[in-house]
Image (cartoon, rainbow, N blue to C red; front, side, top):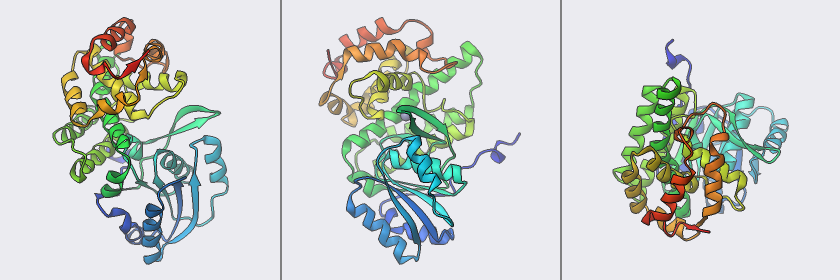
Length: 350
Ligand SMILES: [Zn+2]
């Protein structure tokens, strides 16, 4: 089977400063005259105004502007029910929750979806799943890749740096997830899609070569996160982007008193599981040195007790999902790593 007939990848991709002020031009070219905007609640006025002005200048009608506060499936279903008729495209503008809801609604309505992130805190901006909550529980629901991805690099660079660092953490997780995927092949015969694995790996290295908090670094980060979403679409699973480090983060989300940003959790978990996997540890360490990831974690340390519990239940989070955590009881090793690794000294409290 020729897989190019089975996947759909974004048609429009813009990763550059000032892209937001050209939004209307992109829709006009695509002949999307009536758009529905789902924007993050509390998004800076300046970002909303730039988008509105560009749409207005290009005679694009905004048939609805909905502020998204939470990413619950229940809320998304109501928004879908009340969808205005004659919408040409759905736009997610802002942070992860608005983008996840917009992506899912567009998928249900079979409408073109445009992702317009205001920060780069994780790889969800261009992934084939929507992360929503159902009855309060986090779920990954099937959706489609965006029709368009518009990353205004200047806007994303102006967002709080902790969001950028969270994106770096989610990207570092690709180094451990691809290894887990290969373990699953060797132990369970789970097929690895070589091209998806290669794409995932290559995008991380491109960013690692220049992981600076500036326009170029932000552009590389956005591109890498975006191409990772494409890697997931190519192989039809989250394997190239999500492995044992994501299981630990999901476990933390369910048991922690105060879960932190997704990318901070998976990044830190990736550093630790890389030691279980005995690969890539120094690369991840250096990446986090250069991006000041450690200081951000140290400014609000994690609970050592919660992490050990998360590592303990992580292998039970997903059925039939082989990772390094399936090989043996890893809790004692993680305990030793937390207690002896100098980089982790300030990352945990009791
Ligand atoms: Zn992730």
